Image (spheres, one colour):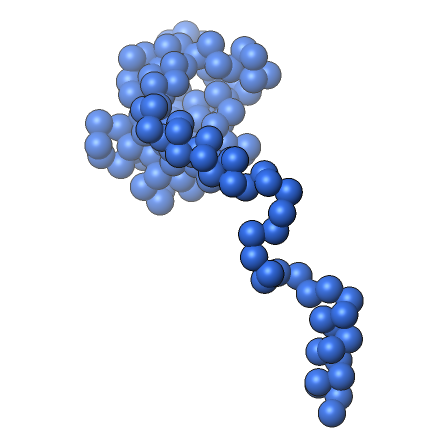
Length: 127
């Protein structure tokens, strides 16, 4: 298995940056995975010491490959196969967003209608 080539989409899935391998492949196809500033294809062979910039829904990662991982393992094991070299300003931006997001209050009055809103809508549409 050591000589076997490791596809980028399989590697990103195995180190748990994406929940499914198809999500990892879609990210590659949509240009959300870059290697040295260029878009990386899902079928690209992963080499040790490669650096990738990966945009997920949660954050923008910059990772350096430290080992090959051919199958998905638990998080504690998976983090041993890459080094997170994400810039500090990106990490600060995420912390700020998290602080705003988890205040427990709704940020806007938009969203799902309440029972009262639904009754008001029903009265409006029936007239």
